[in-house]
Image (cartoon, rainbow, N blue to C red; front, side, top):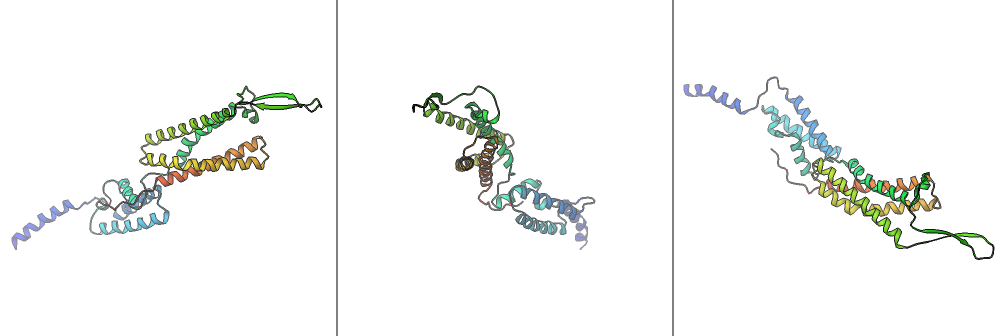
Length: 266
């Protein structure tokens, strides 16, 4: 009996080394801070508000149970809150990356818009924007007598039918290649783990929304009798650009979805 009494203090000291203790530790304040951080990270990874709050409530209960037994939050969360939130997100079918959709809209849209505007100005469209310059004409215009004996003059145009198609195709290739190149570079610089998935889904989605955007812009032009005023040109550009933004947002959201992985807690 005396042996047990003498051994008990030593066992108690040994156990105290295994259980984390903190001087002036306020467990519930730290629990609340950790839960808020995890919930915020889950929302940034694309998990909806309701589901994120549900997960946070379950986590809070686990942390409170750990605190009641004298354990610190790290016994549940591990040393890295972001890593814990990433595993939670993957278990619910979301890649642990922020949306960054507006960054991708910027890196995709700037090269396309620059090439489109440059091509439009180069072939003479700049006159519709109030610019005065020498432009490249894809067709030849000539004034000839009408031939009806009235002495009137009519304007005719002629040229190689393939030239406009070649110019527009080259411009489209340069704009799209520049957009994908700039986006890939930017996502690689910031270490986005869904870079490849994002580019693949953009390649699938953008041709569809691009055709839809061009068709919608043509409808706007038809509704205005194809006038070339600045207001009509701006409206056509906004309609086509809106479809581009919609396609980018859809592709990025698609890329952030993953097959749910089994939960592996610490």
